[in-house]
Image (cartoon, rainbow, N blue to C red; front, top):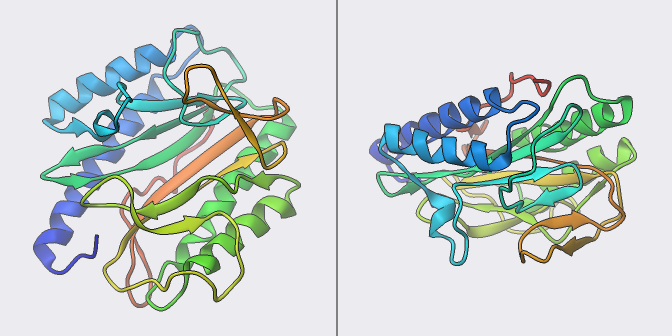
Length: 254
C-alpha cells in the first residue's frame, strides 16, 4: 500500500491505534495458568467490541485471531491449551481489518523476571527491529533495514531467521516489498514515500533454521533454543518514518 492522501493516512492510523489497543490488552492478560487459547478467545472478543475483523482468519487454512509463539516456537504458533508458566517467552502476532485496511504487528513478553540469557535475547530482538526503523525513509533500500537487523542480532550472539521476512501491508496482509532480516546496505527494493511496511524479525538463540510442527504451522527452532519476535508497522516518509503500531515504550516483563 502507498498512502496517496490524508484520508487514507487517517484510516491507517485509526486502524493501527485500535490494533495496538487490543494487543496491549492481550499482553496484560498473559499470566501463569492462562492458555494461548484463552488469549486468542479474548482477541476475538475485543475485535467484536471494536467492530473490526481479525485479519489472520482471512489466511487460508488458519482459524485463529492470533499467532502465539512460546519459547522455542519462533513464529506462526497456533494457540493451544498448554498453560503459560513463569519464565515463558510469549510472542503475540496480531492484526485486524478496519475499513478495508489491514494491520500486522508483534510483541514478545517474559512472564516474570527473565533469565539473564532470555533478557539478553529480548533486548537484542527489540534492538534488531527498533534500530532499523529510522532507516524506513524514502530512497533507502530494504537491504539497509535487513543489514541492521542482522548486525544487531549477531552483535549480541544471536541469529535472525532468514526464511521469514517483513513485508508491505495495508490493502492486504502481505504485500510487496519483502524486507529480509539480513542483507547488505544499498541492496534490495527502494522504499517510496507513502509506502506502508512491516519491519520484523525473529531473533533466535539457535541456528538459522526451523522445523515445522505436525500441525503444519508452528515453526520451532532446530535445537530448541528460545526465540523472540518484534514487528512494527510503519509509514515511509522523506525524513523520518511514522511508527503506526507504536509499542516502543512497552515493558517486555509482565
